[in-house]
Image 1 (cartoon, rainbow, N blue to C red):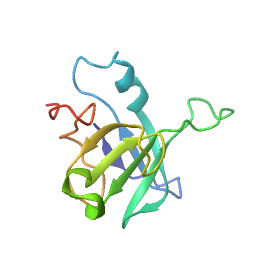
Image 2 (image 1 turned 120 degrees about the vertical axis):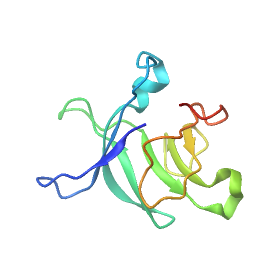
Image 3 (image 1 turned 90 degrees about the horizontal axis):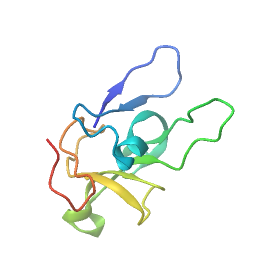
Length: 115
């Protein structure tokens, strides 16, 4: 859910995650929605971390990252998780694009794709 947003004033790429449906009050959607800023790379793609709600707060442990096929095709794609490559994850998109996709997410990762 979301799309990359170029930012002329910031040195890092941003990603804005949002929903277009009526699920905006679901806890997982609240966790995943918001602004993410690039903070590194993983498996040849940028990684993003969610921005803190207030500048005085530490950024939350919500990451958006790509995982390649080294652990099998079912694990390949874009992920939202508590850490890059961790087991505690919320959503997956099997797209192998260079940047995070805006549609086609499985939330939770074992569910069908949300339209």
